[in-house]
Length: 355
Image (cartoon, rainbow, N blue to C red; front, top):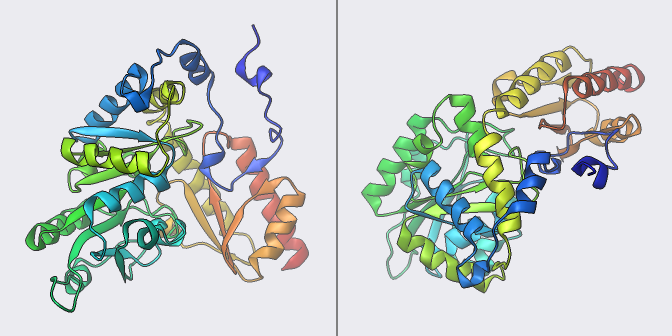
């Protein structure tokens, strides 16, 4: 029998793809899990593999229940819509994924007012958070939700410290607010901190995490919370068209992700730090090493990032410029030491040409 890699060849095998950890491909064990997965109809509530994934996810997050969803964006927006009523206000970091990359969904879908708060490397000052809380009145919307992101994408995969999470919880309890965590890469945070992921999730009412990033599943995220919250969230999943049928095929990959792929995230973190240190020696580049905390490296460029991106691509290295003078490199399971060295060599070669 052919292996999965032979049956489904990777047309990008010669590329050093640092655009995102979403580009990871399923493992052999995932394909085997898909072949043997017990299936039902998840919309009808009887897909046993989906139910197993949801139970495993809830247990790992220390929550009562969970629901499998097609994407992190859907999971986040389901959470906002479940926690809030139209016209409510939520507090959120000014460059959070839920605002920056989800196409205005909080306003369109949930009808909430988003009050943004600046941060230091994705970490909001608890005092700044508390100052922005509004009580509902004839004139003002009531603040009912605090939205967090850990790790923080646009800050470069930075971690929200546990002491900050505890402070946010205290503020929310004092003001009757709920907390939702966009934990797309929360397992990266838990591995980097050396704590079980439930130690992070215990401070929030709901958490959404992605299976399809560093955990290598092809598709899917999981939203976790109380039993009552998840029952209401399922209505939003249906409303948004997220109800899937024999989704145990995908959920089986998620089970492999949670049981076999978490600990290896430390390899991505180590490789990111090593490459970051090497790139600090390249003329025309600057990296704030204190921001390299997990699997991302934000490279600041003296010349426009677009000039670097174009030349990198010519050398088989793919990356994304999140700003005019910044390149984002994301490390994942498909980036080995050899590919990391290829990327560093490409940066050095380009520097000699354009700096």
